[in-house]
Image (cartoon, rainbow, N blue to C red; front, top):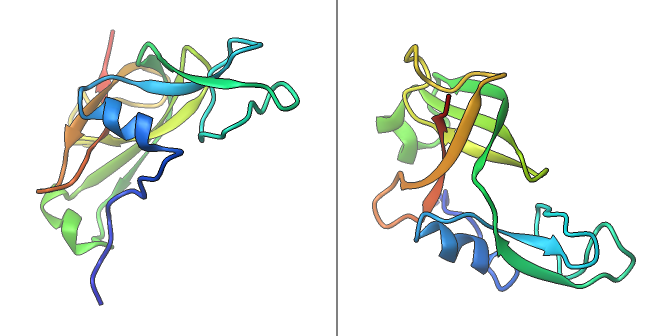
Length: 136
């Protein structure tokens, strides 16, 4: 069986992944309330049947948690071990999961610190994925 580790990219999520290739954060925003949200939806989760548009969002926020995987669950990520995943609450509101490079380093993002999202390519032929970078 072939291991699949790439995200599902469809019409609903394509703006996010396309912007990531340019190292930009684009999220759906409710036109009526001006609030960004994730995951994407064709209608606003804030206003009944509200319209949505994709906007560039500042990629800064506070790290809420970080987990470090020392056991390899997916062969594709073996060279990245130990592999870190963090949850960032963006200043714009939504929370996103992101890769944490070298999670055991003293300067790696930790819960409670400010961080920025950058998009980096982790796997050959893979998409650029959200990656946390500590921001003081």
